[in-house]
Amino acid sequence: MSRLHIPPTVEASPDRSRSPLNAVLKKLGTVPNLFRLVANSPAALEGYLGIGHALSSATLDARTQERIAIVVAELNGCAYCLSAHSYLGRHVARLDDAEIAANRHGASNHPRADAAIRFAAALVLDRGHVSDAELAAVKAAGYGDAEIVEIVLAVALNTFTNYVNEVAQTEIDFPVVKPARAAA
Image (cartoon, rainbow, N blue to C red; front, top):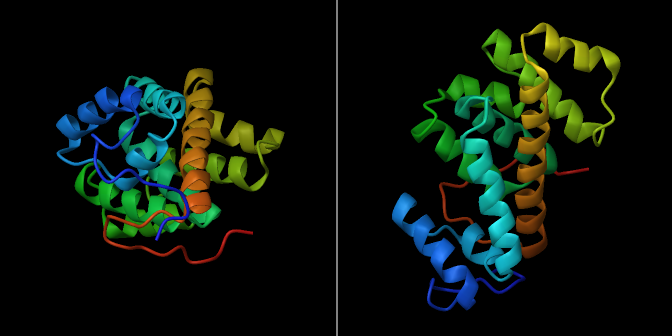
């Protein structure tokens, strides 16, 4: 049971959250618990959806963004987000099991994506204080400044959802995937 209130329906959410939640319903066919939880604050929902929308038109490709979501959830020990993004990774981004496993370990089976995932993991582990070598490695893989900023944004967005779900202990409404290690 969640430690924070999750409105059971869109209609039970704050007035300002209903229209954005109905848009989520139209797009996904359902409104996952995370969205209804964040909807407790219409401002937080607006920010979350706004950043998500911005990333949908980013230079950084959607498959790499999904890989980043997986490694961030694993490193932060968020079972809700790891479950959601493992599901989305498989069914939307079309990542295979070997790739998802590599992502969970802070790597990728694809050389260019590997550099992005390693950089994202360093961001989480070092709280943004990456080394010159880590930055040089992601640049050497062909990531430009815009994509590097977008990697940071993807890490930040996923860290937000990880933290919200950990605070709330949100009930998982995806096939459950447990992080290999608890967050430090």
